[in-house]
Length: 397
Ligand SMILES: *[C@@H]1O[C@H](CO)[C@@H](O)[C@H](O)[C@H]1NC(C)=O
Ligand SMILES: *[C@@H]1O[C@H](CO)[C@@H](O)[C@H](O)[C@H]1NC(C)=O
Ligand SMILES: *[C@@H]1O[C@H](CO)[C@@H](O)[C@H](O)[C@H]1NC(C)=O
Ligand SMILES: *[C@@H]1O[C@H](CO)[C@@H](O)[C@H](O)[C@H]1NC(C)=O
Image (cartoon, rainbow, N blue to C red; front, side, top):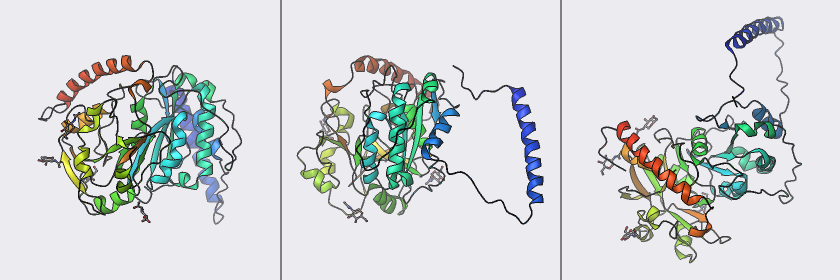
């Protein structure tokens, strides 16, 4: 289906002419009203109307034309400078995991930019939840920017979504139906969602992470105070935040002290892909000398398949490759580009992330191995592209 915003040239010209005439008339009107300033009598637009208007007017798609991309559906970005700290979280989810935003918002004091993927049947729940989160949490209104992504073909269904009443003091009464990565027939487009969230961040530094991770306490304020303000922040360094996992429903430690004494904690992905995080050098990190300040502890040499989470300069960060959908290579491809582009990787002494739940080999969706195999081929192609994009780089993936 063709996005609706492509109008013919003639229509555009007629529209422009009418617009000019209107502006002239309006101008004359204003001059006649001299000394009688028009009082702003803009209607109060409720969150729901705002969302539905953006959906009706949807016209921008991703580069493949498959998804509509709706940045900042609640119009929050304008009213936020970059918040109190110049480092933001960029993240993405379906309606299934959106509830995690509540906890993330409590842990992270800076801005949060979040892309939500939905489609026809899911939209009623997804939109209700976004609206509810926005209406019921003053902090979310102040810090979070929501973006919506859905397939162009589901526009006709989503446009008719009806609102549900919100009672902030009552428990959520609606449930989503889909498992992660199995949103009906949709493929999960991690990197379209990540790029959208990333581009909409107004802070200069960004931590791109998954919605089911929680950062250590005060990470954004200490990064601001100890790294940005002390002028040691570099555009070409990835500040690695070591990542762990814990059992479903376990308490999530917020300080390094608590983390190190928590018996449920283990390195992230240790059962699925130990090599993916091992380069973090957990042991060295654990035995670092104690410090109240956030500091750069040690440098790492990146090599495949190391997949760290990190804070980096938003403007220098390469975008994610949108050709990777579903499972595999969607993050490592970007990290490999950073390596080739000259980024260094430096581990932060006190910062960490914890994933809620252990990643297990048998807990993935059924198509995972097929997707992984296809993405491996895309990764091989992408490595060749990198060689020609960075001809002078001595680094390889
Ligand atoms: C986080 O910062 C607040 C305010 O500065 C402080 O009161 C609190 O103790 C800090 N928490 C941790 C775990 O460092
Ligand atoms: C980092 O990038 C920003 C934006 O491109 C630029 O203004 C700034 O000068 C750069 N800083 C350094 C240290 O290169
Ligand atoms: C990265 O590390 C190498 C080796 O330590 C150093 O020569 C280079 O200047 C560093 N690059 C940046 C951007 O810090
Ligand atoms: C993990 O890294 C340590 C040192 O950083 C190394 O000694 C160990 O062999 C590595 N383990 C795996 C499974 O790669």
